[in-house]
Image (cartoon, rainbow, N blue to C red; front, side, top):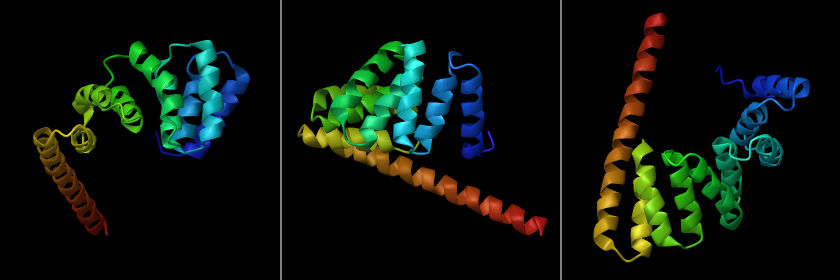
Length: 176
């Protein structure tokens, strides 16, 4: 919770050493390693979690994402499909499954997944990806609509970040 990933990795490794078969330990370690872009190490831990629980949606999702990072959608797809089967209500998995389908140029499938992924779109990025799919499908009207939504959401996100930064600067000035 303190964003000290190095210490967290150390603690999770110690916990795994104590009980390598405890559920979620390998996933927790793998997730932090993945977050820190230590992909080979993350894969080892995520695969270890899947040996304990083959339907662990988080481990399947993160493992699929490691392959998306390397632009290997054909390797990502089986993990992401299993992840969405294990947790069909998770819009983030649908978003990443849409990315895999987009990289494979399976645009109709990508459209379906992005439409579900929009539910958790905080900054317009899923709308942008959906707009690109519509462009690839030759659907200018829907592409334009999604680009407009992306632009509006992205602007709003940046304005909120600027306001937050200004508030932090004001607090620091007051503290001085």
